[in-house]
Image (cartoon, rainbow, N blue to C red; front, side, top):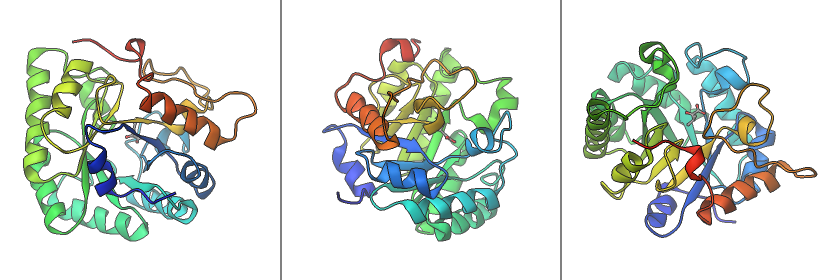
Length: 264
Ligand code: KIV
């Protein structure tokens, strides 16, 4: 198996879909790396599924580096993306320091959450040689501003804001976009804006890639699952079998189905 790079994902644009799962330790990074999934996200969702909190707000840069190091130790084939946690992308200086620590821990691209105000941060990371993914739509770090985990981009203002943010991230030189919980037609429009690969979660079937939180798709999350989740684990599976089932469903255009997403 060849190691996935950003060039691999760019080459897939309009040719084939790709998949991403979260992982937070060496064992699950090994299983993901042994499957056909292309990208591992060391997500700050670890604040919820590992640390047991009800949001990602309390996750520190130290925790992100600790888990990134563990994932890098177990990974062979996947591209590793790590989250810049809450408030660390609030200024250029903080974002550069956070990205430096994450890249030195083993990340190959960092992900930042926000809106069109991220453009100067994307430019600064870009100039410093740090690949960057911009996460738009429902950005969980902003849960308290949104007043809950709510679908974004449904009314005209929110839709235009998402499009504007995507255009400004692309113009600033982002390498990937990630759209969470937005209507499927808006995600399609963003995916058609440029050659930048777009990853979706709860964003319909037309993005270039799909991501799921590992605990959700393996059926390990004891809490209520979001509508966009499908459990891919079957009895007797290794984690790699379940990751492969997810990857095959995405590549065959079978996941996500309409019931996993939202209309405008
Ligand atoms: O932290 C995370 O796992 C994420 C995904 C939900 C995309 O950002």
